[in-house]
Image 1 (cartoon, rainbow, N blue to C red):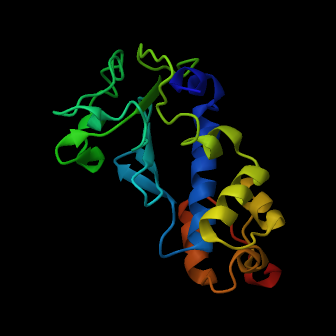
Image 2 (cartoon, rainbow, N blue to C red; image 1 turned 60 degrees about the vertical axis):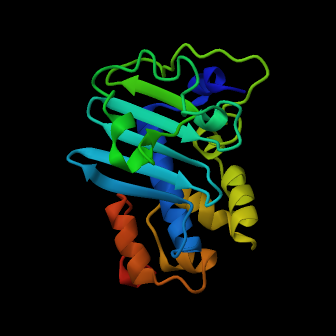
Image 3 (cartoon, rainbow, N blue to C red; image 1 turned 90 degrees about the vertical axis):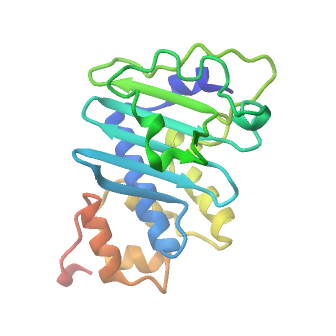
Length: 221
């Protein structure tokens, strides 16, 4: 699987944003000190940012801009890594066709490493666009990281998140609680406690509200 398959699997931007927020909330409950997924509302004026960093050199970002959505990923072991040659260079065609309304994001300081935009996958969708787009990249047997970086974004299921979380956090994860968060059910103390006995509910509730989740009143907790 490469980016050409990924563009057919990604959900519409509205669904993608909901999934990104859910992943950030779940990770924040399970491990507030080192979440793999995060979500920043108003990262720029009217622009939200979802980010994944697995701590092993791989990451992705999803920028939700009024002009559209810009998504990129970096698999540090990918055949398409810019580090395959020096000076670093993107895989041919990676950014070709990126619309001008989103073309400034590869140069964002937050996405630069030592003055370069490290990316092996790039996808975008303009406002009112009917489908996700990518550049005219071609591969033979090479991998660009699309086959694993975005599994949780394309799947969106309880099974997918529980499998990830139990491997990442090395403990059993409550499936019903995960389902409730993914379904955007009002957050309850029971849901939080089921996921983490040490999570501070007041802190989690504030994070949930910032992510657009309802939080049940004290009498219903």
